[in-house]
Image 1 (cartoon, one colour):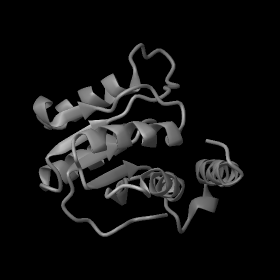
Image 2: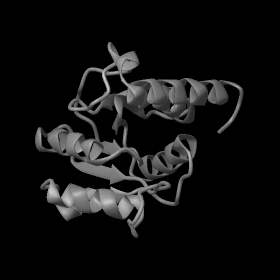
Image 3: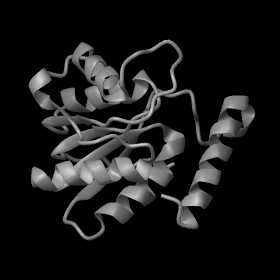
Length: 168
C-alpha cells in the first residue's frame, strides 16, 4: 500500500470504481482544506440496477458530502482502465496548470495507481500524493484472512503483472 504524507494540493482526484469510501475520503480532505478542487472521473461501472455513469454517481455523492458544486470537476472522456483514467486526469491538470494532485483510491489499488500515475506524469511538473481510503475494510497487514482480501490482492498482483508487461 502507498500512503504518502499529506500536503496541500491543487485538486483531490477520486478514482472511479470502488464505492462511497473514496468520495467520503475526498470529502474529509476537502473539508480539511487540502485542496480547492475535487475531480471525479468517468469509468466503467458494474453495479446491478444502477442507471447512471460513475462520474454522475461520485459527483452526486460529493455534493451529499458537502462539497460545493462549483468545486467539483469531471475529468474529460471515459476511461476503461486506470491508465486511461490517468491520461484524462493529466489532460485536465495540464489545462488548469495544476502542480500537485491527491489521488484517492482503495488501499489495495494504491501501488498500481501510483505506478501508472507516476509514468503518465513523469514528463510534467505535476506531483502526486497517493491517499488510500482510511476507513476501509481492506487492511494490508491482514489481507489474507478474508476471501475479499485474497481476491482483491491477487487481482491487483495480476493487474500489476499485466501493467509491467505492457498492458495499458
